[in-house]
View 1 (spheres, rainbow, N blue to C red):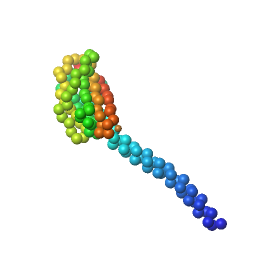
View 2 (tube, protein in one colour):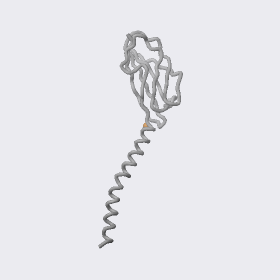
View 3 (tube, rainbow, N blue to C red):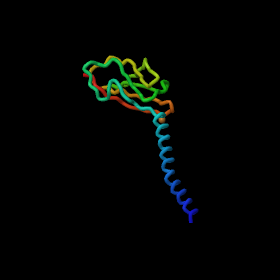
View 4 (tube, helix red, strand yellow):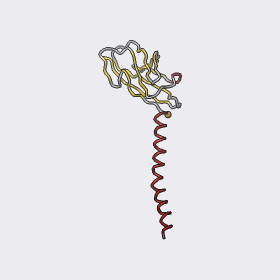
Length: 130
Ligand SMILES: [Cu+2]
């Protein structure tokens, strides 16, 4: 009977369609997450870098702009943390500022930033001055 074929085809089409809707949902969620969170793209000094000449400035490049009022940067050396004050930022998530005069030794540039969605991200960049 011809009419019975139609419901079967309909069910099959429905089953094929559902995964695409789920995939679309996951894709949209992924885009939203990528826009919401930020992360560090690059830094100067770079993580693990060794400097014959002490760097005079730091640069952090984040994937998105950060909330400046709720973002902090410190330089840790021999257990002592010195706050760093950025003096330049752009709308694309780049932040830079002066470093104090660095003697030879191991340092960590620790950053803690708040993305526009309110999520905090933290990290530590180790580097050395010879
Ligand atoms: Cu987020």
